[in-house]
Image 1 (cartoon, rainbow, N blue to C red):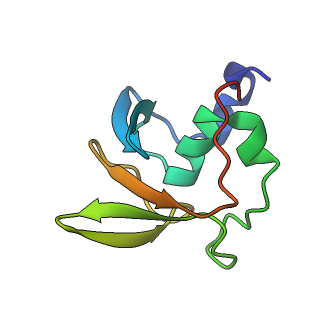
Image 2 (cartoon, rainbow, N blue to C red):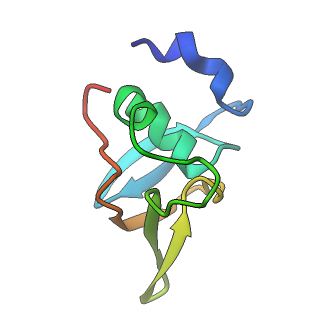
Amino acid sequence: MNIEDYKDIFEPFDKLIEIEILGKTYKVPENNTLLRCFQYLSLQSISMGEFCWNGDCLNCQVWIKNGDKEKPLMTCRAKVEEGMEIVRMADEIKLTENG
C-alpha cells in the first residue's frame, strides 16, 4: 500500500509535525485526528483494525502525558498537536514499521 494512493482520507495539511509515541518520535500530518495520524504511520494495520471511527468502541483510546499525570483521549476525536506525548495505547492499536 502506498500512502499517496490514500491521501484523500486525510484532512488537508501543509506540513508534518512531531509527536512521541511510547518514547519514539514520529512525523505525522497536522490538522488530522490522532487515529488518522496512526493510519498515516501504519496504513494497513490501522485501516484493517477494529475501530468504529466515531468514539463508540474505545478501541482507539490512548493516554497522553499531561504534566505529571496521564490524560485519556479517543484518537478518533482528538486532533494531533505538535509535541504530543502518547504514553499508553489500547491493545487494538497496532503500529507496524512497514505499514
